[in-house]
Amino acid sequence: MQMQMQKNTHTVVCGASHSVALLTNGTITCWGNNDLNHCDPLYLTFRDVIQVACGDYHSVALLSNGTVRCWGANFWNQCNSVHLTFTDVVQIACGAHYSVVLLTNGTVRSWGSNHWNQLDPMHLALTNIMMPHYANNHCVLW
Image (cartoon, rainbow, N blue to C red; front, side, top):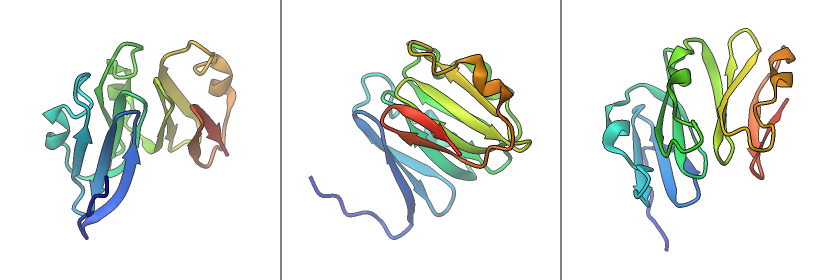
């Protein structure tokens, strides 16, 4: 299927069965499967979004004030309330069932599934991280 993206589209990211587009006006739009609230209308309330990321069944938005919002499936706590405690986030990334944030002080925090030690406490010792990247269901930090 080919889609015509609007000229006001900044970024598009994909989960397992849904997609999210960040528009140049700081809002987002979502399409695809919604059986697990992948495209829950909650995202329509977000303003001043500067980055989006998708896991398999959840999505994360970074707002310009450094806070994070999540929506979608919560089977593995990937949308639990811990993300609401962060107020100084500069970068976000998602694995299949977990999320990672980079804070302004160069440290990393994560939440969600720990089935393969994705949330290993080792990440708490990392400092001066520049940017997390998602690759093949793993988050790569550099």
